[in-house]
Amino acid sequence: MSHFGCDTILCFGDSLTQRGWDVSRNGWVAQLSEVYARKLDVVSRGYGGYNSRWTLSLLPQILPTTDSKGPRPRLLTILLGSNDAFLPGLKQHVPIDEYRSNIESMVNMVTDPQSAHYSSDTKILLITPPALGEKLYSSMCDLYVGRTPESVKACADVMRDIAERHSLPCVDLWTAVETQAKEVGGELDGYDAFSFDGVHLNAGGNDLLFKLVLQAIKQHYPELDPSKVPHVVPLLSELTAAIKENEDLDIAQFLKFK
Image: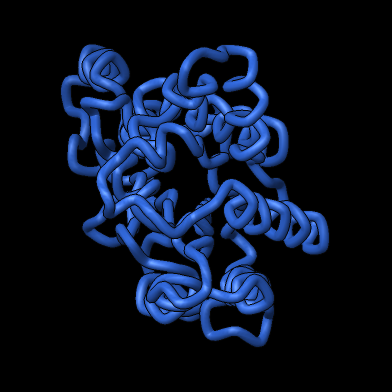
C-alpha cells in the first residue's frame, strides 16, 4: 500500500465538479468526502470552463495505468456537457457527435482490456449536465451567453444514451432539476432553488446531486455503499479496545493500512 493509504473515488468533469468542493454551497464532492472519510479518498479533478474535447486529453494523465502499483479509483464519475453545449462559433462549443465520441472514449479508457488504463476494479457513474435555467441564466452578466436549454438537453440526452449502450448507471441530473424546478415555480421558474446562475449548482442543487449520486452507488454498486466500505485503519474505539486486551500489542502492525 502506498503512502496515500487507500483507493479513491475520482470525480472528473468541468466546473460543476470543481465547484463540488465549495462547502459554502454544500458541494456534492465535499459531501461525498465526508461519508467516505477514512474509507476512500475522494479526489476532485474538475476543470472550470473545459469541454469534453479538452478534458479527454487530461484523463489519461490522471488515471493510473493497468500495471501501476498503489491506490486506484474504485469509482469514476464523469460530469461533462454544460460547456460543450455552447453554440457553434463559440470557443467551448463541441459538436454533439464529437461530444458522444469523447465521452465514449473516456468510458473505453477504463473498460477496454486493450487500454493502457484498463481497470476491472474501477466502476463508472455517468452524470448528465443539469437543466439550464433560462431566465436565471439570461439575468446574469454578459459572460453568460451562448447556451440554450435545448443545447444542454442534447448533451444530457447523449450522456443517458451512452450509459444505456454501455450498461452503465447514469445520474439524470437534467431531469431531476427540470422536474423539481417546475414543481417549485416562481419568477425564475424554480431553477433558483438549484442554481445560482442558471448553470452552476447552489446548496439546493448540490444537495440534490449528492443524494442522487449516493442513491446510484447504493443501487448499482452496493459494494461501494459507504456503510459497507471498511475503514482502512481501525477506529479509536477499536484501537483502545485492542490495547486494553493486549498491553504488548504491536501498534505498528495493528495500524497497518488494510
